[in-house]
Length: 155
Image (cartoon, rainbow, N blue to C red; front, side, top):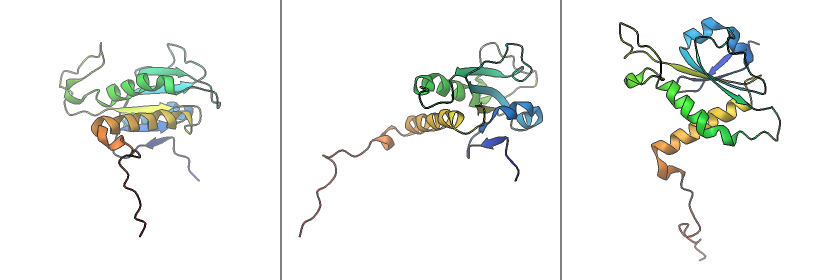
């Protein structure tokens, strides 16, 4: 059975993976990864070759039931959004250099990884998808209240 190192979220350039996905630069390049979120209880050295050349955001969270990922959602959502729009509409991170031939048609990808690519990274990605869907259609997330649910017919 082959284990996927990068799992793509359908309809986007957003990927989930484990730590080992960082050791596959060709796969990252094929997926056009420009931004990486590491959800780990340890931090890479600033000069680590595993994150060199990428915009990187570290979320220092242990893999346990008491870890509070919710506090990181605003920053991780913003980082993912910025990463997915890195080349679109001329939006780039501060300090990024545009190429001489123009970057208008390029796309970018974001990898969210934890140690195994299962729980912490999936939580960050799901939080982003919920946030994004709410931004597109704020009324869709409105749950019916008791006042809006019609009473049952008792005849």
